[in-house]
Image (cartoon, rainbow, N blue to C red; front, side, top):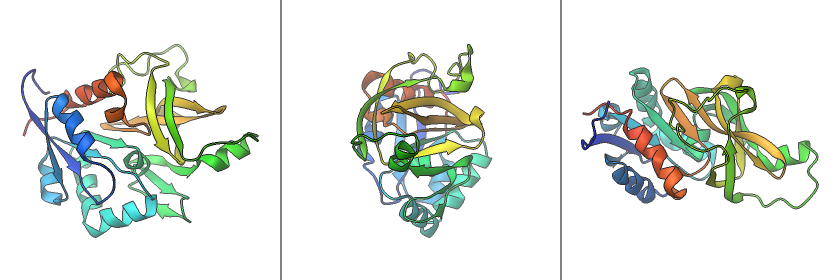
Length: 229
């Protein structure tokens, strides 16, 4: 575990998509030494991994494969390194996406990524929906939580149900196993998974680095999980 006042190194995976600067700033704020890297060896040597990203699923996976980062990510997770996937990086954790046809993901969380607009239509929404959805939404514990606090001991521990976080996305993920879902959001009456936890892998559709204090606290909890290297 990371000790108070110490600096744990985290690899922010650079595969040519997304704004990495704000993620690096959030890591520094949380006391982590962040290294933006596309070197598979540096990724496997880090105490933990962050996979950010914006853009198209298939292109992102092709970039990870071209740089041999997919193999490095899977090896690091297999070694028990904690991992945080953000926005597109969250979606890449899943088995597959229907974006622009079909593409395979990292397969760290069983499930698939589908169109937010299509899901809205399938649930009977007939109004004007802004896609991509850009803005703040409250997050809540998933439907299967019942009276349990599923956030205790996770990166969402201490987050108030109904806390508003910042989203930018056109697709959403659905875990095959409902228990992998850690949080849900509601957009125009469509309720969907917006955070997952499986082993030491955590992913969120929202951008914690753009979500004020509540988002920065997620980085602080991630820092506490790192192995100092």
